[in-house]
Image (cartoon, rainbow, N blue to C red; front, side, top):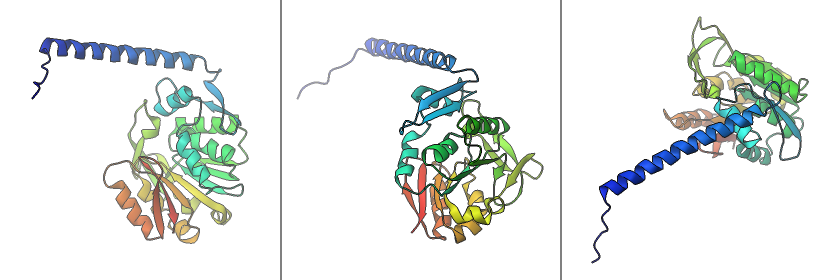
Length: 270
């Protein structure tokens, strides 16, 4: 039997140190390249790029230096979560007469895609962070979508009220989380309250990305789920049995899940 080759401990330590040095150099170079890309943005931190259908898109990215989502858009010169968005588009759940709700719209990446690329007739977007909501509005205007997109600077929950921020990270604005609070200062509404009968009649998709608050959002849309049963694109983080809880709630309305990505699921009525 051949004897195992023994590695000199000193050599192993030197190799590990070399790898760590190379990793650090790569991180520094990557960060410098990112800063160079951001510096090349137009005045107002605007990036223009061609969508897959060659439509020209403009995105205001004021926090691109630090924010993860905006950084990805700069790096790829395209929509964030482009592959998932394309997959949903291919499923044909949104058409030219569709109303779409974007709950947790952030800076409008998905909102712009729904209206511009999928061609939805109307998008109703909700974003509770004042800074992100302002950027959302800027991106709607940059792409000439003011007549087809309505925004609400508010949380969405099980009932009207207020909420407060409980977690904030400048490196991931989309990961900001909120909780219900009687005097929280952040307005909260429900989908059943905001959407008109005309909206519900054409509602084909609700996208929900709310950092764990998906059940309250759905509880505040029971009327819609019973009447219209739109497709639901829900981000479910892998913690606290989020998928199991959401799937069980929606099963009561006849929904079944299809996995889109690691944390994203499309629920459709069977």
